[in-house]
Image (tube, rainbow, N blue to C red; front, side, top):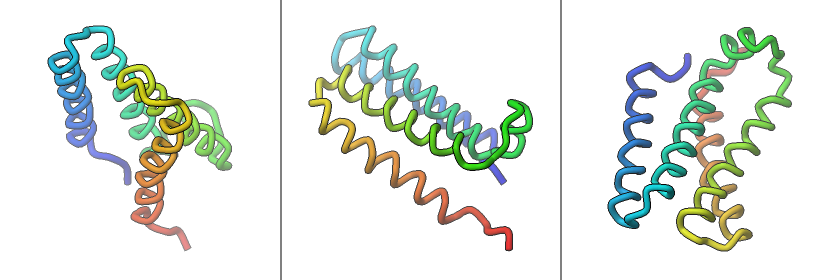
Length: 117
């Protein structure tokens, strides 16, 4: 069972609000645009992976785990680049923070998924 459509809508609304807050606090529309694009991409990745069977069938991929690992690395890179570009964090610290932040969500998601035994 994947994310409900209402939850995905809330995630996109949260992306929009975070971008608006970034624009208001930093007075920089380009930073707000990057925040919106990055968070929307992460929402899309999470939504697609929450419905893995449908997504992989639609894309013609098998769920052997390689695509999941690639998506995990891409989501870490997106979040880290947002932190570097918008908040001017150092590169190493951004990637370490992103690893733990995004990794905690992936780990939590893996723990709550039902097991097919």
